[in-house]
Amino acid sequence: MKLLVMDIEGTLFEPGVQLPGTSLRSTIWQAIATTLGPEAVADEVRTHSKWESGDYSSYLEWMRATIEIHKKYGLTRSAFEALVAGVSYNPGLQSFMQTLDRDRYEVVLISGGFRELAARAQADFSIHHAFAACEYLFDPDGTLASFNLLPCDFRGKVDFIGLMLAEYGLTQSDWVFIGDGANDVPIASAAPLSIGFRPDPRLAAATDYSIDDFAELVDILKERE
Image (tube, rainbow, N blue to C red; front, top):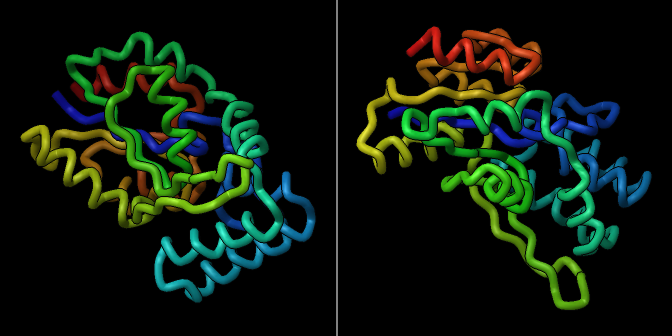
């Protein structure tokens, strides 16, 4: 058995939004700013500039700054849940998941995005393991009250996969990764087999394969078995 490690935003789900002046695509983070209005968008773009300039000490600090934007401009439970429910899966994913040999591959989701989006994919595809960087906690009136954060993006993704390999008694050669963004470069570089789904050019340079449809992944996995 091997782990099939899959990014979520932009890989399982269509990326949706990339704001002008940003270098990373996202499914939900930037869509929230768009929903909250032009001032929230401007603040969101500023956080990206600060990240690129190294002004944040960690990905967690960047997430905290973004969460403050969501609080400032009044993100509600209903608006957030509508965004999570409204995004679409990428081409071929659903067919691929139906035909994947789950005795051979244990699927692990890992994302710098939201736990709520991971939970949607877990329910749809019977996936038992997911790590997501942010989970939102709302008051009964729908106001964003608090949050839970995990350092599972950029280099942090590699650390979490190490935990899963140890849990299953697998070696460092017993896993495959598929992702889409520049934030996936560290984990793609560490994986024994890595695939970019419509990848950012920076990720494409670090992966073994690039695909445009999950139907292509079936042949790659068979070829490398």
